[in-house]
Image (cartoon, rainbow, N blue to C red; front, side):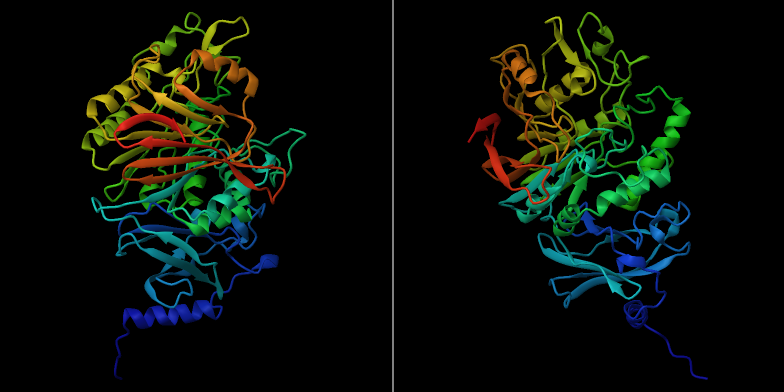
Length: 522
């Protein structure tokens, strides 16, 4: 008998034909497709991308043994990357198994791509093809780059509104979207104003409930549209696990061992539902999601994790856990120089990246308000909030001192969490109104979550002259247009989160000039 060799190309062709004609066909239930959760791309570099999907013909299946209504075996999936939207010019492809251990999620690390180029991609499984997605690779490191357009978003509570902001951001066709945390909300709302329910009506506390929470969010058509339209960078904040948690300390004072088990489940579900590389896959309650992402000589993003390593919140003790308003006299612990917001290891990494320098614009993608915010308590005394950077003033001072001493070029900090728009000058000395700005901060409002009391916060602004703009009554996102000589920032607000077809408008525009830190109203 003559034995004929089979090339890899022939093998892929044969397997693809089986996939397209329904080999290993899944039970697709009423959905008719295993791609009910959409597709996504993330962590773009000059020559690589991470592609994501999760097979789930029954996305909210209550059966924890068969998440997504999938069988308990490995399912082959073909992925393709092409230079055209019709997927005729395929340049990269492969077959990977969707593993039931990870709820049949796929994280394809596709390399060998060309820099600064538009690509299209899709997945094929059980005779069904996914929608076609789009991403753009980053320009080559240090390559002359004249423009980058990106948006950043945070705080999308499924129950409290529709995700029309995602749809409008997708329509702007940015090169990149940055998710700054609270991508999901772990709790179940009892507010009478809620518009839609979490499917299981419980707080997510274990792997099955966190998985279903992400699955429900991923069924939203506007979130699917945004993910399919452009690549993303992503970090988390507190609601991916529990409100106001810090490292191993729970807001509800759970035994740290019990809480770390919950954190492990939450981190696992986050990885299973985001376009992150295998290196970000959690090992128990620990995961690495930080990183540097360069876009030619124009911009570098430094993405950090504000939850996993931070010191316990100052003056955090029963019966009231989590963030609180405190005066200096009542909470001297807030000033302890050994307390860290990022963790000392992450601080060391970040400050090394500052000294490394490189791009013209250096964007710190983190989660919360950095600027000093002097509040007034009910007695009229000056107070500070303990749960954002104001609860870690020594760590903030280290951060800003490193920004200054490293002479990192055009530092811009972006954040979310506080459900309101802010434009701030960051200074080494917030007590001196004449002190120069050393960095610029823009904070985006929430996608749907309600904002803090507007009148109360406005009444505090005279004590905070470094804050140039504040608005908590609007929901939306932030659009940024980066060019060599100027960064243009637009605060974009949707008309009504209670309406799926809400319109969008520009609330305020700002500029930051190359070589000159600080906010300028456009």
